[in-house]
Image: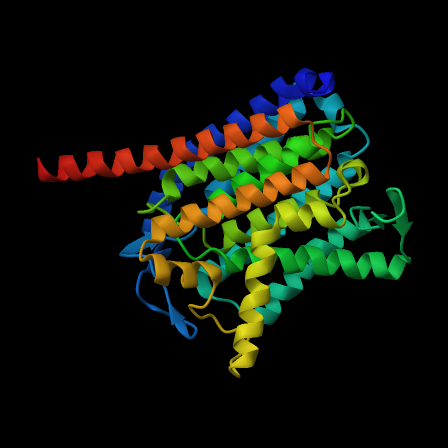
Length: 368
């Protein structure tokens, strides 16, 4: 493992643990607040041309807890080792500001279901903040030209960045259909990208963002695994989709990791695949591509497996395999890759089992 990875591991670990603890503490508060203001989602109700598959009435603004933990960990990480941010302080602030807008529009949609045009307008504004502050896809890696970089015209960099960020944000929202699925996928993807960035000392801003994202997503999974106590809603799905999309084109990560082409498409592959197959299937049968329906990848697997939990685990495994391929493509040292995969499996398992034990304890107390 590179010496630099060992040197900065404590900084990454602290940021991760702070995010994990902050979200775990914030979820009960957000849960009670949601019940007071009526921010709940009823299972089995109509959703577009389909229906929601969870059971009961569950608070649906869990993204607020994720956002709180994410911000707290960013603040702590920035204080304990400010030099890690290097030259990317402005870009970091731009990403946080854009993420805040995503959470805001997601929260409004969770509460009042605002129009798609308004959601898209705010999403493009959040992506535009990145472009204006230099977080954009300026080149791609030429894998057929000895790893050289192919720089693109400015207008093309702007268009590609906007489409990548907005497209992936909505793609991630597409997969938020089963308890624990999105929070688990976000954890796995963030840890995979973190392993790529951990190889280089100048990747401080990316490390901070990814450690905070992974810890926040895992902390939420602790409460969100089936049967979920709270769901993230659009506020959480937009944040968890926006952040990896933005970080993957942050200057300090994209150069050496070559994530402007293949690595993020692999690591973030499942959220990208789902809207593609959904759109093609709906167009083939003459249905609207934007109207919600139960024809996502997780819906198709759930129908065949008969188990939401098994479906989630299958898709987690697929995401982990894609993450491994992305790490291999980015020349991640084998030891670092093996440690990342092992830690990811153990952390996901611990969060899921903790939720199941909590449910079993509640059932016992209820029968007592």
